[in-house]
Amino acid sequence: MTNIGNLAGIRCPECGNEDRFIITATIQAEVTDLGTDVADCSDWHWDDQSMTRCPECDRDGPLAEFQMQPEGVTATTPALPTMQSITATPNLLEFAERELQWLLDVKVQVEAPSSVMLGFDQAIKAARAVIAEARGLAE
Image (cartoon, rainbow, N blue to C red):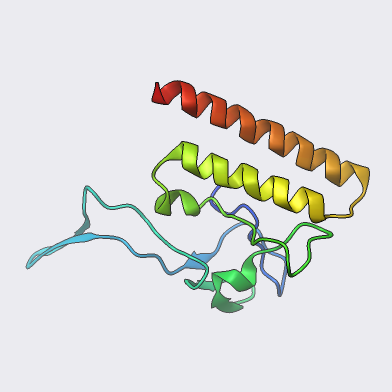
């Protein structure tokens, strides 16, 4: 399954699992003497350094070790953004613009089969549509 949400670009390097992971996340909690609840104003946040464990094979390490790169991407290619970046970027327009820039940067560096390049073109088109929609909502 190719993930397009929270786990986009995430795969266990050991067993190939892409379905679910245990990721250490930061939240704000409302704590009283009687118990703890997630604060109303809280959001989940994790980053490349958040400890991650694959429940299928128990491989663990920083999330960065679980981020896969598209075929043909080199070590000098900008890092693959993940959907979790939305928590660090509350503005959808800003997130979509960063995603589009990443796609454009990677596309010029990748030598891949035409089917992969077509995928990049479709993703670029979709990112541009999201940006147009977000700009319309912002007005």
